[in-house]
Image 1 (spheres, rainbow, N blue to C red):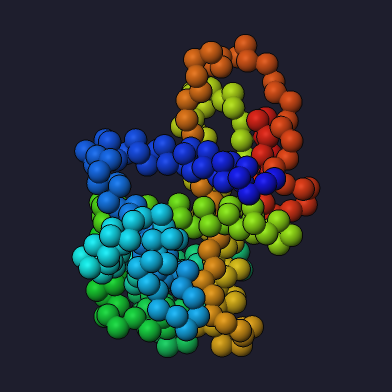
Image 2: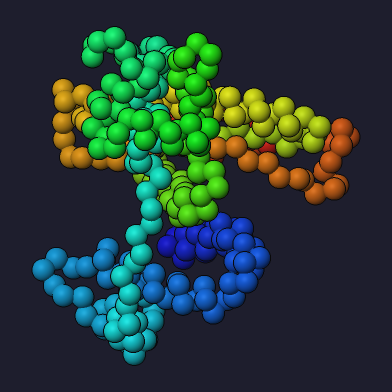
Length: 307
């Protein structure tokens, strides 16, 4: 594929990628001029930070060349540049650290990551307890305050056996709009970066899988959502054990090397099909050609189904 063809294919992919973004922008009353201002500033920010030449200052002329903006516009944007606001963290909070350790294997869960009920305090400091877990994670907040928040959020439940039960095995911000928007800011970009890596480095693909069927009746969807949620929780338990065993905070003896951030993720999505494709009369489709060579870790999808 020639560079021109690659650019055209990439442009078409970006157009499809941005469609739900533009739909939501319009829904929220954010017009095109607002998006245009965001994109201009972002082009300049990325060019300045990620395309710098070694030992050379980024000049207005070079930034204009990289971005396609006029030199006058580059000067204006650089003069009025604002520091990017730091989004709140939802991945490394007290809540996520407690959940992660509770599901991170003995003594707080079994070998599969299924959390054990815990007493608030135990007879000895060696016995597993909620207080021991909080202190083990180095959380500089009283364990009782941590428990109160987990109880309030419906993540932990105190039952008649006087044991604390972890009933939500993932932290999804509930009424916290800011936390949800932080996930919006991070998760799609991470998935996009994985897909882009697999496009550019097919010899060393990263995990990217999905299953697709296109003739599922809407009556099946409520049960399907619930079953998918349970599969997701099983996946999270296994992923938590896998990464926790190699995290150097948890295991000082874990393999060394440059510090890296690793993410394992899975998602569920549904959408109605056009009316002409609904109903049992739709004939089965032949599987599409795999998107990647068999045996790779990049996406392999078909219209009837794939893994």
